[in-house]
Amino acid sequence: MIQKNKKFENLCNKLDLISGFLLAVLTVVVLIEVGGRYFFKHPFTLTFDISLLLFPYMIMFAMVSVTFNNEHLGLDYFRNKLRGPLKRISMIIIKILTILFIFFMFLSSISLSVSVFYNKVGTWKIPQFLYYLPLILSFGVILYMILIGNLNSIINSIKGKE
Image (tube, rainbow, N blue to C red; front, side):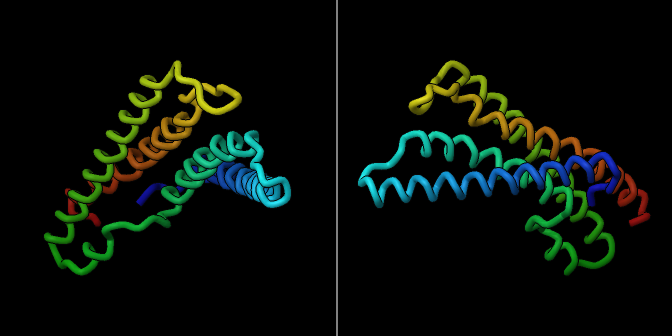
């Protein structure tokens, strides 16, 4: 369980607001693109570039909030079926695997962004690393939240308090 504190809660509320705004903008952009295809028989290239840029930011910002609020699909269902020490051991394993997964996703997103740093994409020739930047930001924040919350939980579970 990720510890609830005011800083994380404020950050997640702001990211929810930004993600919702990006969803609204993305909806308008896609409607313009569909309208362009329907009425002019030709899509606007500008709308494709905008939607290509907005979508990863919207998803990654929302992912931080989903993780913070424990609204993601987890292995808790299987853990809750277990009893006694087996439940505690499975909880520790799940928490450690989650930390390792997020850590390696964070490292991979940095590696990916560095490898495409000089590539240009779309009609605007936007640097491709900007498309992968939300990966670094969101996995970094999620890793921090999970480390803070899960390390306390693992320590308590080892001591038998949970």
